[in-house]
Length: 241
Image 1: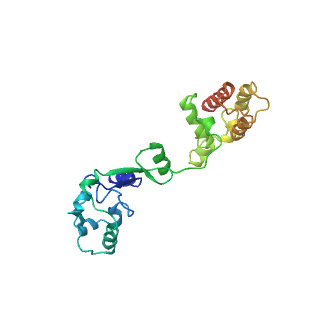
Image 2: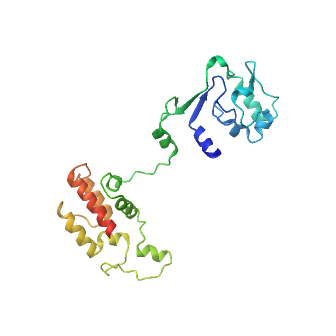
Image 3: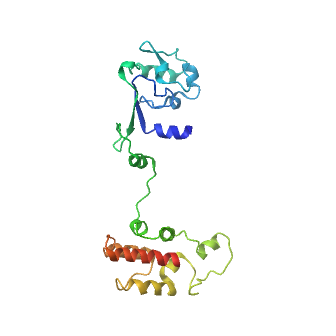
C-alpha cells in the first residue's frame, strides 16, 4: 500500500490551503517531492513531525514551526520552506492536482493520461490491428498473438526445453515443426490457407509475417466486410492448427 501511494504521488501535486488534508511527509506539495523521500526515514524524527502529520501540524501562528537543522537535508528543507507561504484557514482546503500529458498539473484526473505516463512503451508492430479487433473470438486472437511472437509450444521449442520427441511436423511429416513451417510451409496447412485466401486474392504468401504485410499492402486492413472476414479466417486457421 505504501509503494502504491508513492507511485500515485509521483503524478499528483498539492496546492496548500489550510493544510488540514495534505500529508506533510508523503504528499508532493513542493519542488522537493514527497518529503519522506528527501529527508529519509529519520527525517520526521529530526523534524519532530509525526509520519501521519498534516501540513498544518508543521506551522504555528502563521509561521513554519521547525527545530534547528541537524542535517543537510533538514537545512535544505528549511530553506525551501522559507519560499512557501504557510497554511492558513483563509485559503480554503488543500487542492490536489494531476499531471497531464504536457507535464503541467491540472485539477482534472485522466486515467488515460496517467496510464500513458506510467506504462513502458514498446515499438509498435505492424500486425496489431490484425490480431486485436472487436469481431474475432478472444481465444483465436490470443493464439494468433502468440504465433506472431513465435511463442507457441512447437516441437522445436519443446526440444530446446529438454523434452524428447520426434521433431517432424505431425501434419505432413515433411519438415521440422516450427512456427515458420506451420504458418504456412507445411503442405497441409498451406493447402487450407490457399483454399480460403484464393477466394479473396490470388497468389497469397505462405508465411505469417508476409501475410500480414500482404494484407496491409492490399489495403484490406480497413473496416470493410472482406477485411474482417480474412482477419477472422486467418485467426481461426492459426488457432485450429
